[in-house]
Amino acid sequence: RQDPAGLEYQPSHLLSTRETVVGQGDYPAIVQDYFTGDLAKVQLVYLIREDEVIIVDIWAVNSAAFTEFAGELAALLASMRLEATP
Image 1 (cartoon, rainbow, N blue to C red):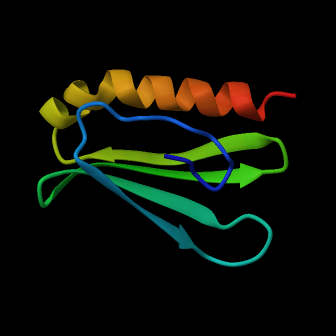
Image 2: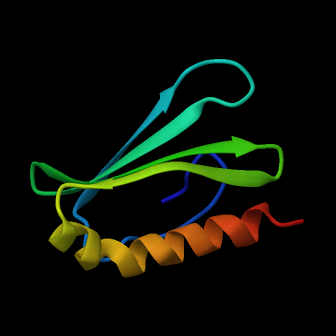
């Protein structure tokens, strides 16, 4: 899977994701919803500005969902940071 910044990652526990671009202009927000079945468990909102990724919000349906996917989110955020670093 590849996001608009060209970053590749494979969530291991999540069954599906939905990505939406919100806004216009140079730096629209990217919203990624992570699902298990029909229930959105975790949402990540970020901007890509030139060569940096700016995390706007991380939301989870509850603390158990956040804990369950914390490792995957940490790996995703680390890969974004590495890719954005020149």
